[in-house]
Image (tube, rainbow, N blue to C red; front, side):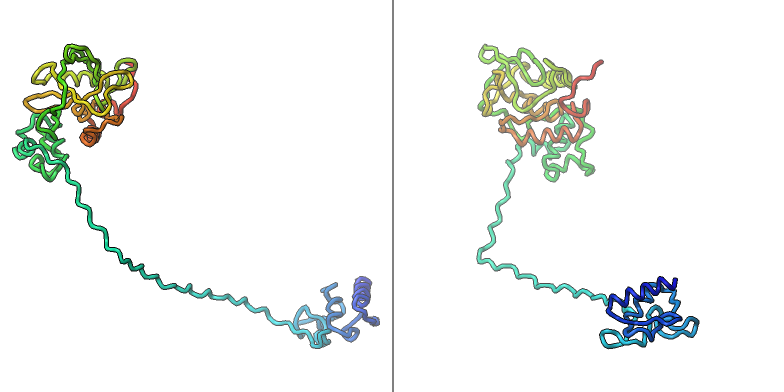
Length: 331
């Protein structure tokens, strides 16, 4: 071990250009000119056989691990080890809030309030019927449709305020309660065959025509079989059986004259009990046809309201099948 220390000492002396002589008992602090030279030897063997870090024992003075503290440093002063200081944590300054800019001042006057769009007035007969209460209606669908069109105006139909008008009335269908009579610009026709719920063979001035009704699309029964198709056809036939003039209907036109298959398009009107009924609306309002908009919108809002009514109350195909367009389940 001593030879190792001497070798390190000699290497250190050569490195720093120091000439020292070893004593018989090994180098001690008196053999070094600067503290850094003694420290290098001490660091090579921290067991400190030569006592460069003070005499061993509990009475040893000085800083542990520092050799020959009495020697000068190459910088001109004895080495002093300071106790490490805890790092100073800077407290971030609070963000400076910039003043909120004032709203720009406009010289323009606020726009005038647009007048509310008024719905078309209800048919006089309808107002009179609703004032008479449930006795004026022959079907729950009719009373409920009228009530939901304006619950405040027709609150007499729901005296207990539970949202259900005239629940004691039987199931049926509603007339075109927005109108007092069948429109003037119609063409008289005679139904000769019900093809399915939305398609009819008719005679117009003695000429055979196939008519497909606007907007109301019933489930398929011809090339495909869809859930609710036969029920929709039967419902259309049942509704037309209440016609005051059996088989006689009135066809009203919209923008599109014919469909892509060459069939005439029309709104089919009839009367029952003196009230005007539109078959397109009856089928949609009772859930046996869905409202499909191909661009003919003479009665757009009435059909949208009817479709929402049927869906909301699970009528027709909504209650039977859950949705439209579903294949008929195999028996």
